[in-house]
Image 1 (cartoon, rainbow, N blue to C red):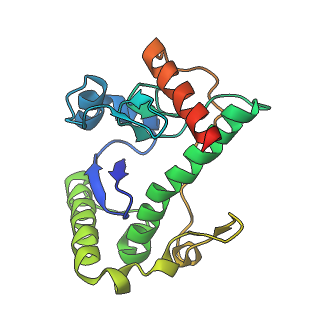
Image 2 (image 1 turned 45 degrees about the vertical axis):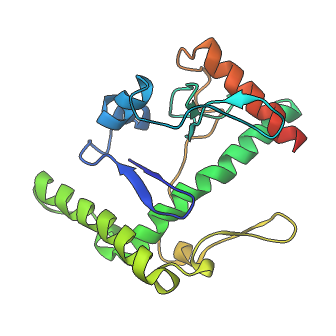
Length: 204
């Protein structure tokens, strides 16, 4: 499980959970997840949007993750009203960044294309090494390692132009917003932040 910035660099990873575990379970049991949920991750202070609404900094996730004030997930269900449908679409667009980051990683470090038939500690070390090397090579040889055409692009009419990595790697499958119907005991603050963001995104 990983988190990235807008430039496809890994800024947080959790390695070693069993592949059959649900993303939400892996997240809540990781050091990163516990720190985020307890407000100990050191995120910047809340800031104002261009409309003056003050909201906290947050991380984008799919429907597998809990809704928190600093962790946004889609609205559940189908046939949503326009404001919620637009929010889910914009959130999905934002999640493409981590999908592209994983795509670059696996396309460039092809040992990750197949199962690692190794002892768990050796497999963890290999994955850690590829993550570090990904960031290192990208910072020094970014144009060759991940040129603009290698990742998804937005066309003139808003269409998605698939990145070249997709011809080498199968994309990650996120969980659909209508797959998980409940909000995982979200707080009132979390609902308020999501609704405020949905209103802002519809108006901008």
